[in-house]
Amino acid sequence: MIGLLHTGSALSQSFKSYYSSADGLKKAELKTALFRIVSDHDVFSYSSLWDHYETTDACIDNPNQVYDMYSTDVNYFSSAKNNTMNKEHVVPQSWWGKGSKYNIYTDLLNVYPSEIKANSAKSNYPLGVVDGTVTFQNDRCKVGTSSNDGGADKVFEPIDEFKGDFARIYFYGATCYQNISWDSAAKAFPSGVNTYPTLKSWIIPMLLEWNRMDPPSEWEKTRNDRVQKLQGNRNPFIDYPQLAEYIWGDSINYTWDIDTAIPYNINKDGGNGNVNSGDDDNTGGENDGNDNGNNGGQTQEDLKAGDIIYAYSFKDLTEGNDYSTGGSSTTWSVVNDSIYSISNCYQAGESVRMGSKKKVGSFTTTALNINKGESVIVEVDVKGWQSVEGGITISVAGTNSKYSIEYDATINDSYETKSITIEDIPSSNPMLTVSTSEGRTFVNNIRIYKAISNESTSISEVSFSGSSKDGITYNMSGQRVSVNFKGIVIRNGKKIFVK
Figure 1: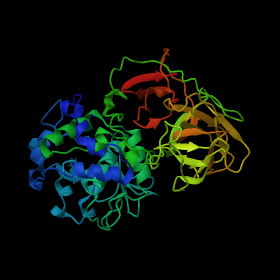
Figure 2: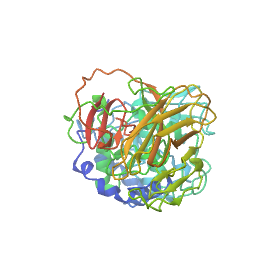
Figure 3: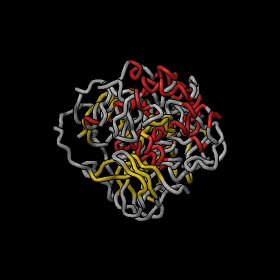
């Protein structure tokens, strides 16, 4: 491919403060906070874009050559303008009514150099997977019919190497321009003003998958830096690709934490590359002392956590506290989109106290997105009363199977993260009940993951003395995962190997 740029500048190392106002938010609120950040940018004339491309889109090994995501044809700035290349709107201009009606028309984070034939073939088609008739194809993209096209006649599909790039441009467009009125021609965006989700439901899963499978490249990062120097804003989904999960994906029930978020620094040509996460030499395995229950529970040696399918943080519980015996007496009884039913539970200041001295407490989740026969890993952050008065019991609604989680922390301690694997779920879309086996228990968070087979790794194992309390854990795709996740993870800004 065309020569990639060297590792990012000081800009990419210091943009944390740029996103500070988005900290602690999720879903629509997070998206709107990012909108307020990135929509404040300079606006250029359409005729000036080629002058700016000489800065933003020049190849490092030959600054006279134009970097092109649409074609492998070699083009130079001296001859490309209006001859062999166009200014291509990734989010097509017909989707908002064409012309300079909105700033997206000349936004360098949406308008890219493109070889003319590819640009013409792309037309105003949405991104998608061509699984029917191919009407145009080169070494970097193709156009054709698709069984999932949002009502468009055709779709535009980049090669795998650029799928994430295009997905992140769509995420940016849907965020920076969530306040504009979209035309009916916008096959990936709802007509009119739609501040959330600003993407149609048919395309969201595909864009999320592309974002995961093709993380940001060194080229994306460097172009992001270059655009900021000229235009004054950035594409946040290049800096923090996991933001998409907190807005549209598998982490919408979490708030985004900028202190633990992992900015990317990945070189496509070099494989997975490196993550900007601290000292890469601090590697090691972790033994968590995990307590698994009975009746089918098994150790994490056999299964590991995959996609998260449920999360609840209890941050809506504002009364009381979890550090005094008199601080958790306000009843919690409100069911919502995540909680199906509640029994004998009390607010404890962003935590829940389940049970009383004489009664067990419980809450039941809404239906989980999992099929019959699959397995799940249930993970809870838990501690007890002045003494441990019993464990946590997990049961599948409608069955007699129960799984026990034991813990040691009491009211004066920090929460322990404990988990249990439940194999062979007896029915699709089950509800799980979390309850005390006896007495009082505090729960701070619950997360449920699909369980997948553990794969072997060639990386050697090294002993590590840390525990599950050492920090939130991310996989190498930037997604939050169970503390028992096996392999290379990021924790506390360190890259470690968990055995």
